Length: 330
Ligand SMILES: NC(=O)c1ccc[n+]([C@@H]2O[C@H](COP(=O)([O-])OP(=O)(O)OC[C@H]3O[C@@H](n4cnc5c(N)ncnc54)[C@H](O)[C@@H]3O)[C@@H](O)[C@H]2O)c1
Ligand SMILES: O=C(O)C[C@H](O)C(=O)O
Image: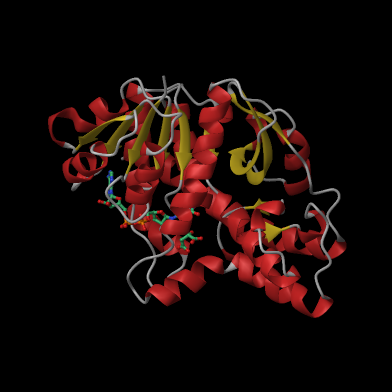
């Protein structure tokens, strides 16, 4: 029995992500929470002929508590998306408070649930979540994940396009660091199976992976950011987490984690000097079992990208940590 919860379920990501979860045979209960429209989304999904029982909640009548009680996995795409010209950090002002409130609800109602954070800026919202959980004395770094899967999905797709492979799923491309612009670092040299990217195309490919989100924001012209590809990527990650609860082994997912609390994380931390970083993580029955360290094997050019990443990412992390500390003083 697996109860999955989506917070922000009526939104652009929330709806298709909920559809994919409803379609999953691994989910027995699907609980949808948003500040608007969840009764309608839940009624709609509940007609689909799959076993998962769907319920929808609004804030009234203790909706968040009801949605979260007995949750095994909580996926959070709540919050505002970018418009052209905005950075993900521009979303901090609004989304920081939203994520803080929702994590407080998790701490009070399902502190052992796996938490998957999609809301941007991920580089700051995950540290916010960690601090809120810590204050509630229930922070388990092996159960808190920043969802960076879309960067890997894009890397797979764009690499395939360049090398002329029709099925992007054949490739594994480690993408490390954070989730915004230059904090996103694809390690193309470690693509499996190995690929040869023409040297005149490498810089462009790296930029496209780093700024793939902007491509969608521009194309949508003010109507939001990636939703469908994000739902695909978020579901892929959520499905992996659900699979480990069912005893499946050998699953590795790239994700933004608190390094000090995960086996192998200390080795990554020694290289980056940062508390949070996205690396490929081996999943086990309790969540993040082992952080892999692909940084030592990076090429000189990739190490340069990691250095650039570190500057921006350390500021984003500090901003999240300080936000929780400052709100505690109010
Ligand atoms: N991690 C990633 O790779 C990635 C990719 C795409 C988008 N995102 C981020 O995901 C977030 C959502 O994007 P979207 O396109 O779905 O936006 P959206 O505006 O379509 O949907 C967001 C939903 O959150 C809801 N919401 C707002 N406050 C809430 C609260 N306190 N509790 C519960 N729900 C609340 C809104 O009502 C809305 O339905 C954005 O911050 C966006 O930047 C992240
Ligand atoms: O670009 C955005 O703002 C949304 C998301 O982070 C993405 O990478 O598509």
